[in-house]
Amino acid sequence: MTYAPYFTEKHDKFREEVRYFIENEVKPFAKEWEEQGYFPRSILKRMGELGYLGLSYPEEVGGLGGDYFMSVVMAEEKARAGAGGFAMGISVQTDMATPPIMEFGTEDQIERFLKPSIRGEKLACLGITEPNHGSDVASIETRAVRDGDEWVINGSKMYITNGPRADFITLVTRTSDDPGYRGISLFLVDLDLPGVTVSKTLDKVGMRSSDTAELIFEDVRVPHENLLGEEGKGFYHIMWELQGERIISAAGAVGGAQHSLEVAYRYLNENLSSLELTEQYHAMKHLLAETAIEIEAVRQLVYATAYRFGRNEAPALEISMAKLAALQLSHQVADTTLQIYGENGFDNAYEIERGWRDSRLGRIGAGTDEIMKGIISKGLGIN
Image 1 (tube, helix red, strand yellow):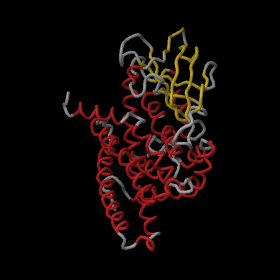
Image 2 (cartoon, rainbow, N blue to C red):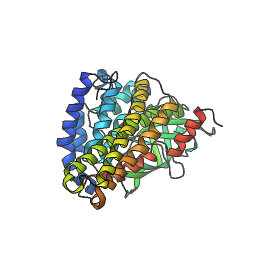
Image 3 (spheres, rainbow, N blue to C red):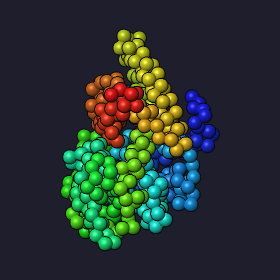
Image 4 (cartoon, helix red, strand yellow):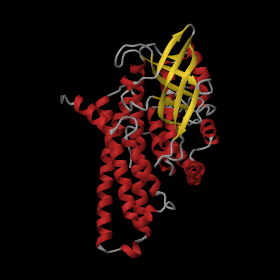
């Protein structure tokens, strides 16, 4: 199926290249990474060498200079890895922690943080969520206090993907007593500084091929030149980043749903001899046909919204719709596929059980279903 005007022949060739990479350099190791609880730094370096960590960044900072749909292709194809944690961990690097550096960073910050991240030499993470505050950015408590040419940071961040091994964090803090979204600022914090500790590494239900931590900051001294963007404008900076995080999550979810669908009908075809002409077989065929329609409808919503985001728009209403629809659908399709597999679907020898577990997080991360519905309601003028 051709998806004009979003993709060109260049995108199609890139998709083939990435699919080959995922199939040969990632998927064979997915189970091993799941068991050890993280993907190796070597695959990050490899992706840097291939240019996969800077697809839409300009060439002058080490990127490939591609358009936003190069990133969409990457998000969709990573979903085929059979290791959602790997896909998420790389997305944190490429679409969450580093875009604010490109958008708001100084030349020095780009040299020290962005360029090494694009080369795969540094692993990045993003620090928003706190133990007492999930997606409510305006309520964060982590505090940075100015002390001469330094800032002293105290607080904690929870559920930080890549946190146990990251080299630096794009950190959201409060820098004044102003209530709500006022007085929030961003910092780039090296995680080997004194006072930074990993208090615990989470044992998660899914996304097990990426490591996730709670990070504690106790009197961490950060130079003033690590302030990212304008002091007190961090809420605006990070809300812009969240829109990109949500749309790339939606694109990955569409890729995941499509992959689950293909796994399901491949399983059906391989078991034709025992299922053919039975009521169960016909019911499954019809279910997958309906599922294909649902995926296609959501795909078009995601592509249309990604097109606008790639043109420097940030339509919060449509992005929230795309995120909600895609992430709910992804888990629904994974659940349907697991049902088709029957008892085999609960056997970790089969890939689908990982896809089922991994897909559930999407309805929580980057804004829960409930937060997306709140944004949508507000956008529709419902008080």
